Length: 229
Image (cartoon, rainbow, N blue to C red; front, top):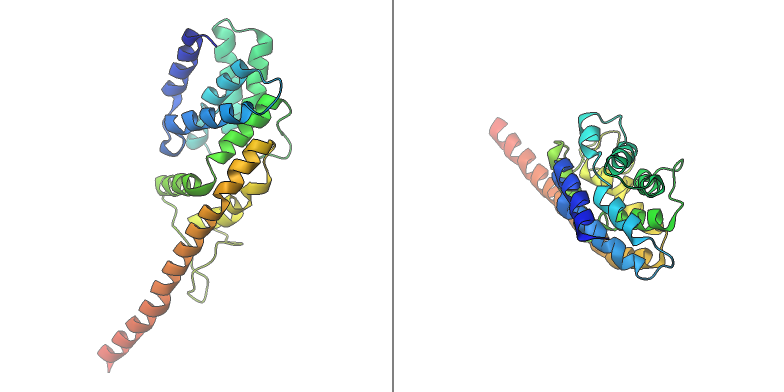
């Protein structure tokens, strides 16, 4: 890809980034992961891959404003329109659009091309391990969601089957289940290397929070009882 083409795509991406959990550094990491994965794949169109990586989250602003919208679908359409407007061939624009529209977990719209599978894996890699934990916590803070929910008996929920969103719920619902859903061998290997890090963080946080409730609540009850005597 020519430097001027890269700069054109990069500048458009930068103009669309407003979400701190899906910022330009996330985009660059996805691009770098994708190129590493691509180095072990056959017949990859690197120009399509680079364009798709740079533009894969340009629909985030619309989804953030209206949660019923899908940033992958919107981003794909925006990317296609931008590429056509700037003289790219229709076939190239269609391939980039497909990559972007299939990079999100959806059973009814899965990646078909090699480039789309690489983007899918690269994007999911940034949700694994310590980086995935950090980005999830950042996003949860942005939307004012808690770390955990309490069960009716006052015990901290593990996050499984919670009706309301929280970090623990996100870990059990999504983060814990990521590691068997990669398309490429390199992507799978990189994800597996990070799996235990994420599990250890979740388990430690759960244990620490429970310790505070278990010990602190009993002490509080003693103090309240003493004051009422």
